[in-house]
Length: 250
Length: 71
Image: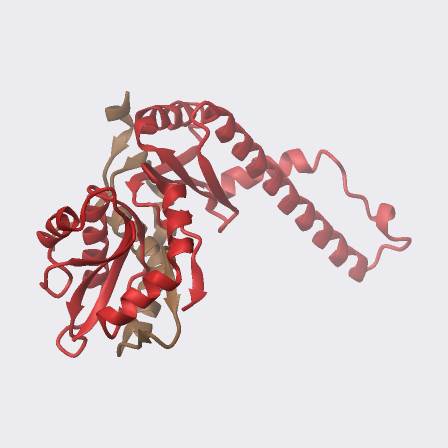
């Protein structure tokens, strides 16, 4: 029987208490979860027979549901979906060999939740406004080229496009500054991806202390009121998926 | 105020869940990891679903709780 791994958890209770916490939760194949521990951290697993089950979208969603249930009871590091190992011995070896890395990540996310914020806009309207502003600085051919030819016109268009992209990026950076200002008192750890696509101009994740959750949601609500031209999509609280920094071959 | 901000959308919750379980978290690779048949195809298929995040553009949404859909 193979094993599927769900999460690395930090334990502030005895092994017996931990087992009783996880035992009531069914794994994706219906088998009960159980925890394998080393010192004060554990890996939560369940038996899994890959020949009996189809790995699909529903299973991935179910996997997330189990991690969500665990996160309500324990501080954890979610493991990426689809991680199967052969035996409990392999899992224990993984845990002991990489204890420090797991432990340090757990400390970082202790008693914290993740929130996601996607900022979406109407590209046509938004970029037109930015374009007007960026074109206040007139791009003239003779600034760059001594002659005006088909080739130089083409290059001039490229320069204008580049300037627009620069202006869009500056606009997003200004928005990040504004968000940071709104969240200054909460002071979350955050990560941003800028201009993910024409529509999705900002994709941010925040690691928030659990007791500052309401404050955070209120701050985003206030930000939203100031930006009727943007769609702010706030999701959470999530287990700290985006703040795990363990990606290596074991 | 919080209740006014909170909204829930099953579609977007699913996209956010899939994005996280497929792309984030602890990544374990190496000899000890078993390769399960069709997992790569599942990943490929699910990552295509994620591109539909663009359809959110026309929606006016605020906060979505990760309220996992029932099986």
